[in-house]
Image: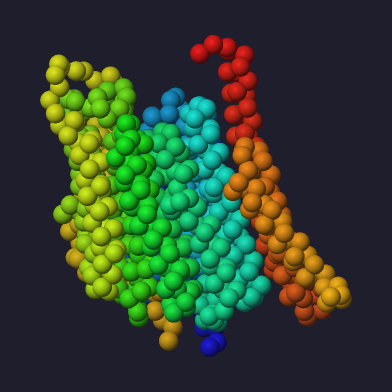
Length: 499
Length: 107
Protein backbone atom coordinates (compact mmCIF):
# COMPACT_ATOMS: atom_id res chain seq x y z
CA UNK A 1 0.00 0.00 0.00
CA UNK A 2 1.51 3.29 -1.02
CA UNK A 3 1.35 6.15 1.42
CA UNK A 4 -1.40 8.50 0.31
CA UNK A 5 -0.40 12.02 -0.48
CA UNK A 6 -2.09 14.28 2.02
CA UNK A 7 -2.53 18.00 1.71
CA UNK A 8 -3.51 20.89 3.90
CA UNK A 9 -7.30 20.95 4.03
CA UNK A 10 -9.48 24.06 4.13
CA UNK A 11 -9.33 25.46 7.64
CA UNK A 12 -6.01 23.75 8.32
CA UNK A 13 -4.60 27.02 9.56
CA UNK A 14 -6.96 26.75 12.53
CA UNK A 15 -4.81 23.94 13.92
CA UNK A 16 -1.78 26.21 13.84
CA UNK A 17 -3.84 28.89 15.56
CA UNK A 18 -4.84 26.39 18.25
CA UNK A 19 -1.19 25.98 19.18
CA UNK A 20 0.04 29.48 18.49
CA UNK A 21 -2.74 31.47 20.21
CA UNK A 22 -1.93 30.27 23.77
CA UNK A 23 1.79 30.74 23.10
CA UNK A 24 1.23 34.32 21.94
CA UNK A 25 -0.82 34.72 25.10
CA UNK A 26 2.18 33.63 27.19
CA UNK A 27 4.46 36.12 25.48
CA UNK A 28 1.95 38.93 26.00
CA UNK A 29 1.58 38.02 29.69
CA UNK A 30 5.17 39.03 30.28
CA UNK A 31 4.92 42.23 28.24
CA UNK A 32 1.80 43.86 29.65
CA UNK A 33 1.39 45.67 32.97
CA UNK A 34 0.84 43.32 35.95
CA UNK A 35 -2.77 44.48 36.32
CA UNK A 36 -3.58 43.43 32.77
CA UNK A 37 -2.18 39.91 33.10
CA UNK A 38 -5.44 38.23 34.04
CA UNK A 39 -7.29 40.00 31.26
CA UNK A 40 -4.73 38.89 28.68
CA UNK A 41 -4.83 35.29 29.86
CA UNK A 42 -8.62 35.23 29.79
CA UNK A 43 -8.63 36.77 26.31
CA UNK A 44 -6.17 34.15 25.08
CA UNK A 45 -8.30 31.35 26.51
CA UNK A 46 -11.46 32.82 24.95
CA UNK A 47 -9.67 33.07 21.60
CA UNK A 48 -8.56 29.48 22.07
CA UNK A 49 -12.17 28.47 22.68
CA UNK A 50 -13.17 30.24 19.50
CA UNK A 51 -10.49 28.42 17.52
CA UNK A 52 -11.44 25.04 19.01
CA UNK A 53 -15.11 25.55 18.19
CA UNK A 54 -14.18 26.60 14.65
CA UNK A 55 -12.16 23.38 14.23
CA UNK A 56 -15.11 21.37 15.52
CA UNK A 57 -17.44 23.11 13.09
CA UNK A 58 -15.10 22.53 10.16
CA UNK A 59 -14.78 18.84 11.00
CA UNK A 60 -18.55 18.34 11.37
CA UNK A 61 -19.50 20.33 8.29
CA UNK A 62 -16.91 18.75 5.99
CA UNK A 63 -17.27 15.28 7.56
CA UNK A 64 -13.50 14.92 7.17
CA UNK A 65 -10.46 15.60 9.33
CA UNK A 66 -8.78 19.00 9.25
CA UNK A 67 -5.15 18.65 8.16
CA UNK A 68 -2.24 21.08 8.11
CA UNK A 69 1.21 20.24 6.76
CA UNK A 70 3.82 22.32 8.56
CA UNK A 71 5.87 24.17 5.96
CA UNK A 72 4.10 22.23 3.24
CA UNK A 73 6.37 19.20 3.72
CA UNK A 74 4.84 15.77 3.30
CA UNK A 75 5.30 13.25 6.10
CA UNK A 76 7.50 11.32 6.74
CA UNK A 77 9.85 14.21 6.00
CA UNK A 78 7.59 16.88 7.44
CA UNK A 79 5.14 17.04 10.30
CA UNK A 80 1.39 16.95 9.90
CA UNK A 81 -1.22 18.33 12.25
CA UNK A 82 -4.49 16.53 11.88
CA UNK A 83 -7.69 16.91 13.83
CA UNK A 84 -10.17 14.10 13.37
CA UNK A 85 -13.58 13.93 15.01
CA UNK A 86 -12.48 12.86 18.46
CA UNK A 87 -9.54 15.29 18.54
CA UNK A 88 -11.83 18.18 17.62
CA UNK A 89 -14.33 17.17 20.30
CA UNK A 90 -11.64 16.92 22.98
CA UNK A 91 -10.04 20.18 21.91
CA UNK A 92 -13.38 21.95 22.28
CA UNK A 93 -13.94 20.20 25.61
CA UNK A 94 -10.57 21.32 27.00
CA UNK A 95 -11.09 24.88 25.79
CA UNK A 96 -14.54 24.95 27.41
CA UNK A 97 -13.18 23.74 30.76
CA UNK A 98 -10.33 26.26 30.74
CA UNK A 99 -12.46 29.42 30.49
CA UNK A 100 -14.46 28.91 33.75
CA UNK A 101 -11.23 27.79 35.47
CA UNK A 102 -9.63 31.08 34.44
CA UNK A 103 -12.64 33.07 35.69
CA UNK A 104 -12.46 31.14 38.95
CA UNK A 105 -8.72 31.71 39.31
CA UNK A 106 -8.88 35.50 38.88
CA UNK A 107 -7.40 37.11 41.94
CA UNK A 108 -6.87 33.76 43.64
CA UNK A 109 -3.10 34.03 43.78
CA UNK A 110 -2.46 37.29 45.50
CA UNK A 111 -1.55 40.66 44.06
CA UNK A 112 -0.93 40.97 40.34
CA UNK A 113 2.75 41.17 39.49
CA UNK A 114 3.82 38.69 42.15
CA UNK A 115 5.53 35.47 41.18
CA UNK A 116 2.65 33.09 41.85
CA UNK A 117 -0.01 34.60 39.58
CA UNK A 118 2.54 34.97 36.78
CA UNK A 119 3.55 31.31 37.13
CA UNK A 120 -0.06 30.17 37.26
CA UNK A 121 -1.23 32.05 34.17
CA UNK A 122 1.87 31.16 32.17
CA UNK A 123 1.55 27.48 33.01
CA UNK A 124 -2.21 27.49 32.34
CA UNK A 125 -1.64 28.80 28.82
CA UNK A 126 1.28 26.40 28.32
CA UNK A 127 -1.01 23.51 29.28
CA UNK A 128 -3.55 24.79 26.75
CA UNK A 129 -0.98 24.81 23.95
CA UNK A 130 0.41 21.39 24.93
CA UNK A 131 -3.04 19.80 25.04
CA UNK A 132 -3.97 21.19 21.63
CA UNK A 133 -0.71 19.84 20.23
CA UNK A 134 -1.39 16.43 21.77
CA UNK A 135 -4.90 16.32 20.34
CA UNK A 136 -3.86 17.14 16.79
CA UNK A 137 -0.25 15.92 16.70
CA UNK A 138 0.32 13.22 14.12
CA UNK A 139 3.97 12.34 14.63
CA UNK A 140 4.92 10.17 17.62
CA UNK A 141 8.01 12.23 18.38
CA UNK A 142 6.07 15.45 18.08
CA UNK A 143 3.64 13.94 20.58
CA UNK A 144 6.58 13.23 22.89
CA UNK A 145 7.56 16.89 22.84
CA UNK A 146 3.95 17.90 23.52
CA UNK A 147 3.79 15.42 26.38
CA UNK A 148 6.93 16.89 27.95
CA UNK A 149 5.60 20.39 27.52
CA UNK A 150 2.47 19.29 29.35
CA UNK A 151 4.50 17.77 32.21
CA UNK A 152 6.76 20.78 32.60
CA UNK A 153 3.74 23.06 32.72
CA UNK A 154 1.85 20.84 35.17
CA UNK A 155 4.58 20.18 37.76
CA UNK A 156 5.08 23.83 38.85
CA UNK A 157 1.32 24.15 39.35
CA UNK A 158 1.48 21.40 41.97
CA UNK A 159 4.05 23.25 44.07
CA UNK A 160 2.62 26.70 43.54
CA UNK A 161 2.28 27.48 47.24
CA UNK A 162 5.84 26.31 47.88
CA UNK A 163 5.11 24.34 51.05
CA UNK A 164 7.17 21.29 51.93
CA UNK A 165 4.37 18.80 51.18
CA UNK A 166 3.59 20.26 47.78
CA UNK A 167 7.28 20.39 46.82
CA UNK A 168 7.52 16.70 47.66
CA UNK A 169 4.32 15.96 45.76
CA UNK A 170 5.62 17.87 42.74
CA UNK A 171 8.94 16.02 42.81
CA UNK A 172 7.25 12.67 43.06
CA UNK A 173 4.97 13.60 40.17
CA UNK A 174 8.02 14.70 38.17
CA UNK A 175 9.89 11.45 38.80
CA UNK A 176 6.92 9.34 37.67
CA UNK A 177 6.34 11.58 34.67
CA UNK A 178 10.00 11.56 33.62
CA UNK A 179 10.29 7.79 33.88
CA UNK A 180 7.10 7.59 31.84
CA UNK A 181 8.37 9.89 29.13
CA UNK A 182 11.69 8.08 28.81
CA UNK A 183 9.83 4.80 28.31
CA UNK A 184 7.73 6.54 25.69
CA UNK A 185 10.88 7.84 24.01
CA UNK A 186 12.36 4.33 24.01
CA UNK A 187 9.26 3.17 22.17
CA UNK A 188 9.71 5.99 19.65
CA UNK A 189 13.31 4.87 19.05
CA UNK A 190 12.20 1.29 18.44
CA UNK A 191 9.43 2.36 16.06
CA UNK A 192 11.84 4.53 14.06
CA UNK A 193 14.42 1.75 14.00
CA UNK A 194 11.90 -0.77 12.68
CA UNK A 195 9.87 1.36 10.28
CA UNK A 196 11.89 4.49 9.50
CA UNK A 197 8.92 6.78 9.97
CA UNK A 198 7.18 8.35 12.92
CA UNK A 199 4.02 9.58 11.22
CA UNK A 200 0.96 7.81 12.62
CA UNK A 201 -0.76 7.53 9.25
CA UNK A 202 2.36 6.30 7.52
CA UNK A 203 2.93 3.77 10.29
CA UNK A 204 -0.66 2.54 10.13
CA UNK A 205 -0.20 1.89 6.42
CA UNK A 206 2.95 -0.22 6.79
CA UNK A 207 2.43 -1.78 10.20
CA UNK A 208 2.76 -5.49 10.53
CA UNK A 209 2.05 -7.83 13.41
CA UNK A 210 5.73 -7.90 14.37
CA UNK A 211 7.48 -7.91 17.68
CA UNK A 212 9.09 -4.48 17.33
CA UNK A 213 5.77 -2.69 17.14
CA UNK A 214 4.34 -4.69 20.04
CA UNK A 215 7.41 -4.01 22.18
CA UNK A 216 7.37 -0.31 21.32
CA UNK A 217 3.68 0.10 22.06
CA UNK A 218 4.08 -1.90 25.28
CA UNK A 219 6.84 0.42 26.50
CA UNK A 220 5.01 3.55 25.40
CA UNK A 221 1.80 2.39 27.08
CA UNK A 222 3.65 1.72 30.33
CA UNK A 223 5.10 5.22 30.20
CA UNK A 224 1.76 6.80 29.39
CA UNK A 225 0.06 4.80 32.14
CA UNK A 226 2.51 6.29 34.65
CA UNK A 227 1.60 9.78 33.42
CA UNK A 228 -2.13 9.01 33.46
CA UNK A 229 -1.87 7.57 36.99
CA UNK A 230 -3.29 4.20 36.02
CA UNK A 231 -3.31 1.83 38.99
CA UNK A 232 -0.72 0.70 40.27
CA UNK A 233 1.21 3.77 39.05
CA UNK A 234 -1.27 6.17 40.67
CA UNK A 235 0.64 6.86 43.88
CA UNK A 236 1.81 10.30 42.82
CA UNK A 237 -1.64 11.60 41.95
CA UNK A 238 -3.51 12.09 45.26
CA UNK A 239 -0.86 14.21 47.02
CA UNK A 240 -0.14 16.21 43.85
CA UNK A 241 -3.76 16.94 42.96
CA UNK A 242 -4.88 17.49 46.53
CA UNK A 243 -1.95 19.77 47.37
CA UNK A 244 -2.24 22.12 44.39
CA UNK A 245 -4.37 25.26 44.64
CA UNK A 246 -8.00 24.50 43.64
CA UNK A 247 -7.86 26.15 40.21
CA UNK A 248 -4.67 24.23 39.41
CA UNK A 249 -6.10 20.94 40.74
CA UNK A 250 -9.10 21.42 38.49
CA UNK A 251 -6.91 21.66 35.39
CA UNK A 252 -4.55 18.87 36.49
CA UNK A 253 -7.32 16.42 37.28
CA UNK A 254 -9.73 17.35 34.50
CA UNK A 255 -7.35 17.83 31.60
CA UNK A 256 -3.66 17.10 32.15
CA UNK A 257 -4.01 13.37 32.90
CA UNK A 258 -6.25 13.05 29.84
CA UNK A 259 -3.44 14.19 27.54
CA UNK A 260 -1.35 11.08 28.07
CA UNK A 261 -4.46 8.91 27.99
CA UNK A 262 -5.36 10.33 24.60
CA UNK A 263 -1.97 9.33 23.16
CA UNK A 264 -2.41 5.81 24.52
CA UNK A 265 -5.83 5.71 22.83
CA UNK A 266 -4.22 6.80 19.56
CA UNK A 267 -1.50 4.15 19.74
CA UNK A 268 -3.84 1.28 20.56
CA UNK A 269 -6.67 2.13 18.21
CA UNK A 270 -4.70 3.56 15.27
CA UNK A 271 -1.47 1.65 15.31
CA UNK A 272 -1.88 -1.75 16.87
CA UNK A 273 -3.25 -4.47 14.59
CA UNK A 274 -6.57 -5.39 16.31
CA UNK A 275 -5.83 -9.13 16.36
CA UNK A 276 -2.71 -8.47 18.44
CA UNK A 277 -4.40 -6.08 20.83
CA UNK A 278 -6.74 -8.45 22.66
CA UNK A 279 -4.43 -9.79 25.37
CA UNK A 280 -2.84 -6.42 26.13
CA UNK A 281 -6.15 -4.61 26.18
CA UNK A 282 -7.53 -7.12 28.68
CA UNK A 283 -4.53 -6.39 30.90
CA UNK A 284 -5.19 -2.64 30.66
CA UNK A 285 -8.82 -3.32 31.47
CA UNK A 286 -7.83 -5.30 34.57
CA UNK A 287 -5.63 -2.43 35.79
CA UNK A 288 -8.49 -0.04 35.06
CA UNK A 289 -10.91 -2.23 37.01
CA UNK A 290 -8.50 -2.35 39.96
CA UNK A 291 -8.22 1.44 39.80
CA UNK A 292 -12.02 1.78 39.89
CA UNK A 293 -12.34 -0.42 42.96
CA UNK A 294 -9.26 0.64 44.91
CA UNK A 295 -9.50 4.33 44.03
CA UNK A 296 -13.14 4.43 45.17
CA UNK A 297 -12.36 2.48 48.34
CA UNK A 298 -9.52 4.88 49.17
CA UNK A 299 -11.81 7.85 48.48
CA UNK A 300 -14.25 6.41 51.02
CA UNK A 301 -11.59 6.56 53.71
CA UNK A 302 -10.38 10.14 53.24
CA UNK A 303 -11.08 12.70 55.93
CA UNK A 304 -10.39 15.74 53.71
CA UNK A 305 -12.49 16.73 50.73
CA UNK A 306 -9.63 17.48 48.34
CA UNK A 307 -7.99 14.10 48.94
CA UNK A 308 -11.35 12.41 48.47
CA UNK A 309 -11.80 14.17 45.15
CA UNK A 310 -8.25 13.25 44.12
CA UNK A 311 -8.80 9.54 44.86
CA UNK A 312 -12.06 9.77 42.97
CA UNK A 313 -9.95 10.85 39.98
CA UNK A 314 -7.92 7.64 40.28
CA UNK A 315 -11.17 5.67 40.17
CA UNK A 316 -12.72 7.62 37.31
CA UNK A 317 -9.55 7.28 35.23
CA UNK A 318 -9.89 3.53 35.73
CA UNK A 319 -13.16 3.58 33.80
CA UNK A 320 -11.34 5.13 30.85
CA UNK A 321 -9.09 2.11 30.57
CA UNK A 322 -12.09 -0.20 30.26
CA UNK A 323 -12.43 1.28 26.77
CA UNK A 324 -9.46 -0.78 25.58
CA UNK A 325 -10.92 -4.27 26.15
CA UNK A 326 -14.47 -3.16 25.31
CA UNK A 327 -13.56 -1.21 22.19
CA UNK A 328 -10.96 -3.57 20.79
CA UNK A 329 -12.65 -6.79 21.84
CA UNK A 330 -15.85 -6.23 19.92
CA UNK A 331 -14.31 -7.15 16.60
CA UNK A 332 -14.59 -4.84 13.62
CA UNK A 333 -14.91 -1.05 13.50
CA UNK A 334 -13.94 -0.02 17.02
CA UNK A 335 -14.67 3.62 16.22
CA UNK A 336 -18.32 3.01 15.57
CA UNK A 337 -18.60 0.86 18.68
CA UNK A 338 -20.56 1.82 21.76
CA UNK A 339 -17.42 1.56 23.89
CA UNK A 340 -15.58 4.20 21.85
CA UNK A 341 -18.36 6.75 22.43
CA UNK A 342 -18.64 5.64 26.06
CA UNK A 343 -14.94 6.35 26.60
CA UNK A 344 -15.16 9.78 25.00
CA UNK A 345 -18.23 10.61 27.08
CA UNK A 346 -16.59 9.39 30.28
CA UNK A 347 -13.52 11.50 29.55
CA UNK A 348 -15.60 14.62 28.97
CA UNK A 349 -18.09 14.07 31.79
CA UNK A 350 -15.25 13.47 34.23
CA UNK A 351 -13.38 16.54 33.01
CA UNK A 352 -16.34 18.85 33.64
CA UNK A 353 -17.50 17.20 36.87
CA UNK A 354 -14.03 16.96 38.37
CA UNK A 355 -13.06 20.53 37.52
CA UNK A 356 -16.33 21.67 39.14
CA UNK A 357 -15.66 19.45 42.15
CA UNK A 358 -12.15 20.76 42.80
CA UNK A 359 -13.32 24.34 42.37
CA UNK A 360 -16.19 23.68 44.77
CA UNK A 361 -13.70 22.21 47.24
CA UNK A 362 -11.77 25.47 47.03
CA UNK A 363 -14.97 27.44 47.64
CA UNK A 364 -15.79 25.26 50.64
CA UNK A 365 -12.38 26.07 52.03
CA UNK A 366 -13.08 29.77 51.57
CA UNK A 367 -16.50 29.46 53.21
CA UNK A 368 -15.58 27.54 56.35
CA UNK A 369 -11.79 27.73 56.49
CA UNK A 370 -11.08 23.99 56.19
CA UNK A 371 -12.13 20.98 54.14
CA UNK A 372 -12.59 18.33 56.84
CA UNK A 373 -15.65 16.37 55.74
CA UNK A 374 -16.69 15.51 59.29
CA UNK A 375 -17.31 19.20 60.03
CA UNK A 376 -19.39 20.03 56.99
CA UNK A 377 -22.65 20.48 58.91
CA UNK A 378 -24.47 23.61 57.87
CA UNK A 379 -22.48 24.08 54.68
CA UNK A 380 -25.69 24.12 52.66
CA UNK A 381 -26.85 27.17 54.62
CA UNK A 382 -23.80 29.35 54.17
CA UNK A 383 -22.68 28.24 50.71
CA UNK A 384 -25.81 27.05 48.88
CA UNK A 385 -24.46 27.56 45.36
CA UNK A 386 -21.28 25.67 46.18
CA UNK A 387 -23.21 22.76 47.62
CA UNK A 388 -25.46 22.78 44.54
CA UNK A 389 -22.33 22.62 42.37
CA UNK A 390 -21.00 19.69 44.39
CA UNK A 391 -24.34 17.91 44.17
CA UNK A 392 -24.55 18.25 40.38
CA UNK A 393 -20.92 17.20 39.92
CA UNK A 394 -21.44 14.23 42.23
CA UNK A 395 -24.51 13.09 40.29
CA UNK A 396 -22.29 12.80 37.24
CA UNK A 397 -19.44 11.14 39.16
CA UNK A 398 -21.81 8.53 40.61
CA UNK A 399 -23.45 8.00 37.24
CA UNK A 400 -27.04 8.86 38.17
CA UNK A 401 -29.28 9.90 35.26
CA UNK A 402 -29.43 12.37 33.67
CA UNK A 403 -25.74 13.19 33.52
CA UNK A 404 -22.68 12.71 31.37
CA UNK A 405 -21.39 10.14 33.86
CA UNK A 406 -24.60 8.16 33.56
CA UNK A 407 -24.51 8.15 29.75
CA UNK A 408 -20.88 7.04 29.74
CA UNK A 409 -21.40 4.22 32.23
CA UNK A 410 -24.67 3.14 30.62
CA UNK A 411 -22.97 2.88 27.22
CA UNK A 412 -20.09 0.97 28.81
CA UNK A 413 -22.55 -1.45 30.40
CA UNK A 414 -24.32 -1.84 27.05
CA UNK A 415 -21.01 -2.56 25.34
CA UNK A 416 -19.96 -5.05 28.02
CA UNK A 417 -23.30 -6.87 27.92
CA UNK A 418 -23.23 -6.90 24.12
CA UNK A 419 -19.91 -8.73 24.25
CA UNK A 420 -21.07 -11.04 27.04
CA UNK A 421 -18.27 -9.72 29.24
CA UNK A 422 -20.15 -9.81 32.52
CA UNK A 423 -17.03 -9.25 34.64
CA UNK A 424 -16.73 -5.65 33.37
CA UNK A 425 -20.41 -5.17 34.23
CA UNK A 426 -19.62 -6.15 37.82
CA UNK A 427 -16.74 -3.68 37.97
CA UNK A 428 -18.83 -0.81 36.58
CA UNK A 429 -21.68 -1.54 38.96
CA UNK A 430 -19.40 -1.89 41.99
CA UNK A 431 -17.61 1.33 41.06
CA UNK A 432 -20.93 3.16 40.89
CA UNK A 433 -21.96 1.89 44.32
CA UNK A 434 -18.64 2.85 45.90
CA UNK A 435 -18.84 6.28 44.25
CA UNK A 436 -22.31 6.74 45.74
CA UNK A 437 -20.74 5.86 49.10
CA UNK A 438 -18.04 8.52 49.01
CA UNK A 439 -20.35 11.11 47.46
CA UNK A 440 -22.96 10.75 50.21
CA UNK A 441 -20.27 10.99 52.85
CA UNK A 442 -19.75 14.55 51.59
CA UNK A 443 -23.31 15.55 50.71
CA UNK A 444 -25.17 14.25 53.76
CA UNK A 445 -23.34 16.42 56.32
CA UNK A 446 -23.38 19.36 53.92
CA UNK A 447 -27.17 19.22 53.79
CA UNK A 448 -27.62 18.68 57.53
CA UNK A 449 -28.69 21.87 59.31
CA UNK A 450 -26.05 23.21 61.70
CA UNK A 451 -26.43 22.81 65.45
CA UNK A 452 -25.59 26.44 66.00
CA UNK A 453 -25.54 29.25 63.44
CA UNK A 454 -22.20 29.50 61.67
CA UNK A 455 -20.77 32.29 59.59
CA UNK A 456 -18.58 32.44 56.53
CA UNK A 457 -14.86 32.88 56.96
CA UNK A 458 -14.51 34.86 53.73
CA UNK A 459 -17.19 36.70 51.75
CA UNK A 460 -18.60 34.90 48.74
CA UNK A 461 -17.47 35.80 45.24
CA UNK A 462 -20.43 35.12 42.98
CA UNK A 463 -18.41 34.97 39.75
CA UNK A 464 -16.28 32.17 41.15
CA UNK A 465 -19.28 30.19 42.38
CA UNK A 466 -20.96 30.70 39.02
CA UNK A 467 -17.86 29.45 37.16
CA UNK A 468 -17.82 26.20 39.15
CA UNK A 469 -21.58 25.81 38.78
CA UNK A 470 -21.37 26.29 35.00
CA UNK A 471 -18.95 23.36 34.73
CA UNK A 472 -21.17 21.12 36.87
CA UNK A 473 -24.20 22.05 34.75
CA UNK A 474 -22.34 21.10 31.57
CA UNK A 475 -21.47 17.72 33.13
CA UNK A 476 -25.21 17.19 33.62
CA UNK A 477 -26.14 18.50 30.16
CA UNK A 478 -23.83 15.98 28.48
CA UNK A 479 -26.32 13.41 29.74
CA UNK A 480 -28.95 14.76 27.35
CA UNK A 481 -26.94 13.80 24.28
CA UNK A 482 -28.33 10.75 22.47
CA UNK A 483 -27.38 7.43 24.03
CA UNK A 484 -25.83 5.95 20.91
CA UNK A 485 -22.45 5.89 19.18
CA UNK A 486 -21.74 9.32 17.69
CA UNK A 487 -20.74 9.32 14.03
CA UNK A 488 -18.71 12.46 14.80
CA UNK A 489 -16.25 10.47 16.88
CA UNK A 490 -15.51 8.13 13.97
CA UNK A 491 -14.66 10.87 11.46
CA UNK A 492 -11.22 10.48 10.00
CA UNK A 493 -9.98 7.67 12.21
CA UNK A 494 -6.95 6.13 10.58
CA UNK A 495 -7.76 2.45 10.86
CA UNK A 496 -11.37 3.11 9.88
CA UNK A 497 -10.19 4.14 6.43
CA UNK A 498 -7.78 1.23 6.04
CA UNK A 499 -9.02 -1.93 4.37
CA UNK B 1 32.08 -17.76 20.58
CA UNK B 2 34.16 -15.03 19.06
CA UNK B 3 33.51 -11.33 19.21
CA UNK B 4 33.79 -11.02 15.43
CA UNK B 5 30.08 -10.57 14.66
CA UNK B 6 29.88 -7.88 17.29
CA UNK B 7 30.07 -4.73 15.19
CA UNK B 8 30.04 -1.26 16.69
CA UNK B 9 26.30 -0.77 16.35
CA UNK B 10 25.52 -4.02 18.19
CA UNK B 11 28.03 -3.23 20.91
CA UNK B 12 26.56 0.22 21.49
CA UNK B 13 23.08 -1.23 21.32
CA UNK B 14 23.92 -3.66 24.10
CA UNK B 15 25.46 -0.88 26.14
CA UNK B 16 22.36 1.22 25.68
CA UNK B 17 20.22 -1.70 26.79
CA UNK B 18 22.35 -2.17 29.92
CA UNK B 19 22.05 1.53 30.78
CA UNK B 20 18.28 1.38 30.29
CA UNK B 21 18.10 -1.64 32.59
CA UNK B 22 20.24 -0.01 35.29
CA UNK B 23 18.35 3.25 35.03
CA UNK B 24 14.97 1.60 35.22
CA UNK B 25 16.07 -0.37 38.28
CA UNK B 26 17.21 2.84 39.93
CA UNK B 27 14.11 4.88 39.12
CA UNK B 28 11.82 2.17 40.44
CA UNK B 29 13.71 0.85 43.43
CA UNK B 30 16.11 3.47 44.77
CA UNK B 31 15.11 5.74 47.61
CA UNK B 32 15.71 9.47 47.63
CA UNK B 33 14.86 11.94 44.91
CA UNK B 34 18.47 12.72 43.93
CA UNK B 35 19.32 9.09 43.30
CA UNK B 36 16.18 8.56 41.30
CA UNK B 37 16.99 11.63 39.26
CA UNK B 38 20.46 10.27 38.52
CA UNK B 39 18.90 6.94 37.59
CA UNK B 40 16.55 8.80 35.26
CA UNK B 41 19.57 10.35 33.56
CA UNK B 42 21.16 6.92 33.19
CA UNK B 43 17.95 5.63 31.67
CA UNK B 44 17.81 8.62 29.34
CA UNK B 45 21.45 8.10 28.35
CA UNK B 46 20.69 4.52 27.39
CA UNK B 47 17.79 5.60 25.20
CA UNK B 48 19.92 8.29 23.53
CA UNK B 49 22.61 5.72 22.70
CA UNK B 50 19.92 3.56 21.12
CA UNK B 51 18.97 6.50 18.90
CA UNK B 52 22.61 6.71 17.86
CA UNK B 53 22.63 3.00 17.05
CA UNK B 54 19.48 3.39 14.95
CA UNK B 55 21.07 6.31 13.12
CA UNK B 56 24.10 4.16 12.36
CA UNK B 57 22.07 1.20 11.18
CA UNK B 58 20.04 3.44 8.90
CA UNK B 59 23.19 4.72 7.14
CA UNK B 60 22.86 5.06 3.40
CA UNK B 61 23.06 7.35 0.38
CA UNK B 62 26.65 8.24 1.15
CA UNK B 63 25.97 9.31 4.73
CA UNK B 64 27.60 7.50 7.61
CA UNK B 65 24.38 7.77 9.56
CA UNK B 66 20.70 8.56 9.21
CA UNK B 67 20.32 12.21 10.26
CA UNK B 68 16.74 11.95 11.53
CA UNK B 69 17.47 10.03 14.77
CA UNK B 70 20.33 12.44 15.39
CA UNK B 71 17.94 15.36 15.17
CA UNK B 72 15.55 13.54 17.48
CA UNK B 73 18.21 12.75 20.03
CA UNK B 74 19.29 16.39 20.26
CA UNK B 75 15.72 17.34 21.13
CA UNK B 76 15.60 14.46 23.58
CA UNK B 77 18.79 15.58 25.29
CA UNK B 78 17.55 19.15 25.60
CA UNK B 79 14.29 17.94 27.11
CA UNK B 80 16.10 15.65 29.56
CA UNK B 81 18.42 18.52 30.50
CA UNK B 82 15.46 20.80 31.22
CA UNK B 83 13.76 18.06 33.23
CA UNK B 84 16.89 17.55 35.28
CA UNK B 85 17.22 21.28 35.91
CA UNK B 86 13.60 21.49 37.04
CA UNK B 87 14.00 18.48 39.34
CA UNK B 88 17.26 19.84 40.81
CA UNK B 89 15.56 23.16 41.55
CA UNK B 90 12.76 21.37 43.39
CA UNK B 91 15.22 19.18 45.30
CA UNK B 92 17.23 22.26 46.27
CA UNK B 93 14.12 24.05 47.51
CA UNK B 94 13.23 21.00 49.54
CA UNK B 95 16.73 20.87 51.03
CA UNK B 96 16.54 24.59 51.91
CA UNK B 97 13.28 23.90 53.70
CA UNK B 98 14.97 21.14 55.66
CA UNK B 99 17.70 23.59 56.63
CA UNK B 100 15.11 26.10 57.84
CA UNK B 101 13.40 23.44 59.90
CA UNK B 102 16.67 22.41 61.51
CA UNK B 103 17.74 25.96 62.36
CA UNK B 104 14.24 26.94 63.51
CA UNK B 105 14.32 24.21 66.11
CA UNK B 106 11.31 23.07 68.11
CA UNK B 107 7.91 22.26 66.62
